[in-house]
Amino acid sequence: MKPKIAVVCAYNPGNSGMYSVDLAAVDFFSSIDCEFNLFMTQSPMRGIGTLKKYIPTRFLQLKKVKIGTMTFRLLKDLEQLNGYSHIVYWGDFINNPVYGKHDFSVRDVFFGISETETEAFQRWIKLFAPENLNPNIKIASIGNNFQHKFDIEDTDTNSVFNTFERNFDLILPRDSYSLDNLRQFLPNLPPSKLDAGIDCAFLLHKNQAAKKMNQFACLFKRTQLDDIGSLIEGLNRHTGLSSTRLDNWLSLKRHSADKMFNTNIETVACSTFVLTDTYHVCVNAMRLGVPVFAIGRKSKNQEGTVGDFKKKTLFEMFNASQFYFTIDENEDEYEFYQNVIEKIHEFISSPTNIYDEIQDSMSRQQVSFKEKIIKFIEN
Image (cartoon, rainbow, N blue to C red; front, side):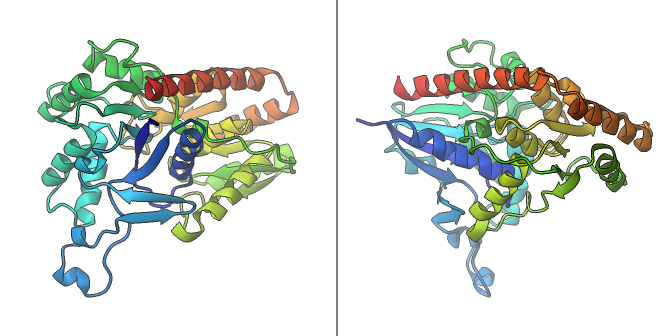
């Protein structure tokens, strides 16, 4: 009998990066001999008009949500998954208790699904750190971020990690820092159950080679630096390339998400290089083989879900730290921009095999990541 897999994804507010993560699930599970369905636990669509005044919004959630080419079933209770052989929590931060206590819980209250954040966090625990699940169902956390500085004194956090240790069959965090972090809390899990992974978006199929245009792509939505326009203008002058902004990267519309996403990806693919402060722009440029440079603030661990630390770790994973530029708290932004411009100009003026080496490292980790997931599904 074919494996039947429930792929549990994060709520997507219109983010191209998250869209690429979910598309990668479709690509990957379509490539192996299995049945699968996509799930999300928070519906982005609510009741309309005056209905909201009289009926709790949890009863007005749609049972299915379509975003672009993908259809997600709404998962309210894990009993819905009793007919499945595997549950795969796919990408983002969804198994991270800091995400559960803050991002998930705040959204749950905002949507009217839970009355309080405390109630919402308990719902997250039931969905993402499950106890008393059908023992015939195998559970995996694939490509999640666990970079936060977890409080070892926090009872809820310890309870979640204890549940992972007892009940999860495989955990492949998306970066080496997350892996080392988890090993402190899950010391009894062997490498067969806790091992290195990468971001799930790296499993999205690679588009056909695009004809390069006299441009570079850019997006700056995370680090919040001042006068970013001067950086772009300086690059225009020094490189002779025009700049094309990925303005729709974080504003996909559900009905046209696929078209908008593909437009963004085509812009990246045909660019000479990419400059950004946004994590999944980096991931998608890397998987397409386009040189990508990123900027961020110096940080020692991940803050929230959009902090800069995850970019630092991403570039370190592929021995590409020279492509990631960080600014100190008191550093002059103009001098920082000038350094970035000089480094990028130097790279594109004197191409080396450095980026080929980065691509080789990425390819090896992609192959290893796929093999580990397939082994979990087939065994």
